[in-house]
Length: 192
Image (tube, rainbow, N blue to C red):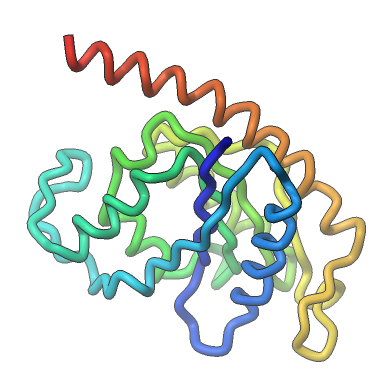
């Protein structure tokens, strides 16, 4: 079974994000190949990046960073649910990602994005950031329009917008299982 963390992409009050995160969680609940958990970086009380040593060294000084990193270590895969703010991801998501690094190595991710233009620019920016972590991002993504997939403030995804989600999850599971062996081989090599 693949362990997937669903990462909400914003800490903005009264955002649409929790509704889409809830939809992602319910979609994954019907899949016997995965175990999913929402992991909200807001629960870790991360300030603006306050680690002295770059994250790649994994020499965290602060308890909030250690807790955030330890939580991410638990997962084989991630689904980021990101809005598009000013043609990119939210500052709060970028800040949370900057705290850690190796916790994402040789794992897989999918992206669910939304915005006025379906959030596709945010997804493309996020792909570049995640590549730096040696995090494989699957091609398919679910992209939602705040005009076509939201009615009176309620997330109501259209079939055409939601359809890529299933193939995205299939790829996450396939890649996630394959990358487990890569991580295991790396751990054996380090132990030797």
